[in-house]
Amino acid sequence: MRKLLVVLLAVTLVLVFSIHITFAQEGDIGSESNPIQVFFVPSVEAETITTGGQIMADALEAATGLNFEVSVPTSYAATVEAMCASPSNSIGFIPAAGYVIANQRCGVNISLQAVRRGWAVYWSMFIVRRDSDIYTFGDLAGRTWAYSDASSTSGYIFPFAILANAGVVPGDTVETGGHNQTVQAVYSGEVDFGTTFFSPPAMPEGYAAWQIGDLPEPYDLTVDETRTVTEGETTRLFVGDIEILDARRNLASTAPDIVDQVRIIRLSDPIPNDGVTFGPEFPEELRQQIVDAIIAFSATEGWASSIGNRDFYGWSSVVPADDELFADVRALIINSGLTEQDIFGG
Image (cartoon, rainbow, N blue to C red; front, top):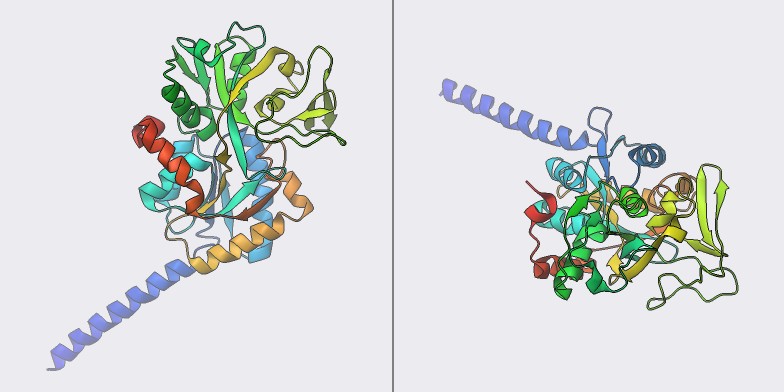
């Protein structure tokens, strides 16, 4: 009997110790030894993301008392892999298609959606050199296509579906590794056409704001002069007084004649903006604390030096979001016949 009591006591102590460890590990999330992992997709220059991301991390740290570690995985696929590998302590800033796949793969879910200059959506655009003989969508058949990454919503997935639905089969394809590189490939004449993101131009005071259905290039280059304006480390791109905010503007400092040399031939349907997502096992209380801190940070001056920077993701603000917003993207991926392997490889 005595031996039995000793055994029962030992088992009880082991169970108590195990439970204590389990709660301690969860409590450790956000500690110095177990910082919250913040992943940004590499859609722009990694150095810009790392610098701006750290500004955000510092602000969140000050607001919540939690510790954050910023990183930029090598690809969209690697970002999703990283989040699924850290289900209880990861935050990801990922675009629509990446979110849909991450949600399907391991239950990653979204809390906030980006707003850019009043728009909660953006577009994919097809671009060619202005001296190209490509004028209609059908002219893309057999031509060399440049895109950033097979897992990029605006760079590849939406364009792929549009091409497939139109029965247009391109020729060779070139994966450039980034939106800037795609624009550069078209500008340099290395490829026939490219696909990348489009954000509406900012119309000058006194003009009607750009609306869905308007021309993607609402100007006349025979009349309106292209120019750049440098403010600190940021170079802004204009045609007349209209500011260009699509992917071409990212080359304004190195190729100020980018609009003179590269034109848009088509836009996609609207795509939900990228958002703030959390690992499937992220503690709800911490999650809400961080969401509140991000919303508060979006109203500060530091936002413009971080994710609100034009050279970073250019978010103006954030709004609450849920999975239902991405139903159309989920359906498009399914209907296009694209599989996760097609998008992420492997």
